[in-house]
Length: 72
Image 1: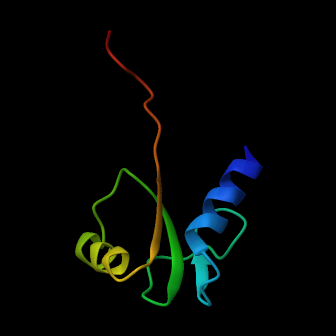
Image 2: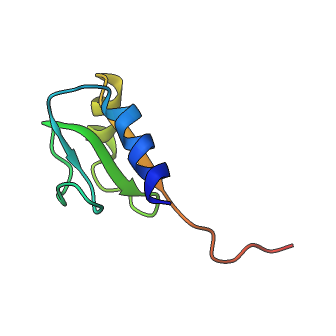
C-alpha cells in the first residue's frame, strides 16, 4: 500500500513548498496552517473549522478511516 499512499500525497502536495503533516513517513504533527497536505483520521472533530478553511484556501487533505464492523 505504500505506493498508493505516496502517490495520493504527492498528488495532494502538487509541488507546494510547505511541510506534509501526517502520521506516516513525513512529519508527524498536529494541524498547522503552514502545511501543504494534512493527513488525519475520520474519527475526530478537532480543528474542523480550521481544516475547512485550509482546504478552501488550497491545502491538501487526506482523511483515512476503516469500517471495523458493518451490519448486513
